[in-house]
Length: 232
Image 1 (cartoon, rainbow, N blue to C red):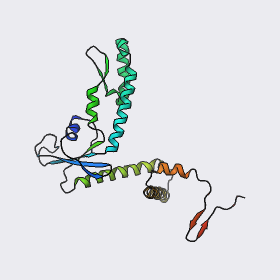
Image 2: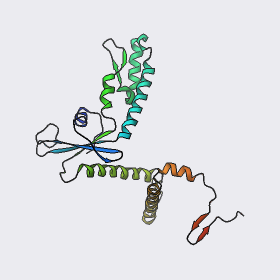
Image 3: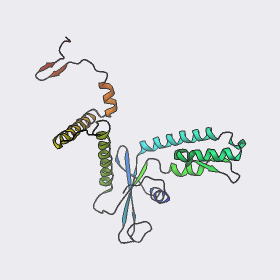
Image 4: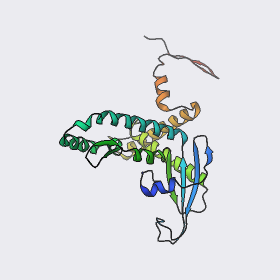
């Protein structure tokens, strides 16, 4: 199963030495195998566990940019905090409990002062653009595993689009045939959305923005032109 959390176990596998192999323009993979009986194989040593480390260079750049912004924001928040009373520093640390993106880069010195945790910043830099896939299947290649996971993301995205942009929920119907028709229409709309995205190599959000600018069009077809009728 994929695991993208910055735990020690996850970091130990994603930082193992080895060469990445390019699968696509924005995806590289390398495989790590834990021998039977190894730590963390999840099966009491009964069989080897395969780990495929996936790395997206574009996502790595985005992760680094986001972290730089978070650290800069944290530095601005704690600027001058050495002169704060202890209670104010305690309250500030408590206020970051709902902001894990900032909290994980903050540390307190032995004297209670607030500092940016440079070690935490360095550790997370090793995880930029990486996620870990774990499997005991020996028949799939690393390329197949990475592709299957990306397809899973597409399926999950489709479910979100069905419930969000296409309004599959809530369904205010009682008859089964109407419920089925509602779901089928949303499925057809999702299919059309994906066809448009693949044909234009762009996101539906951008395409919809362009379409919203169109108010009057004339379509040229093999059977002639199709134009809107004159307003009455």
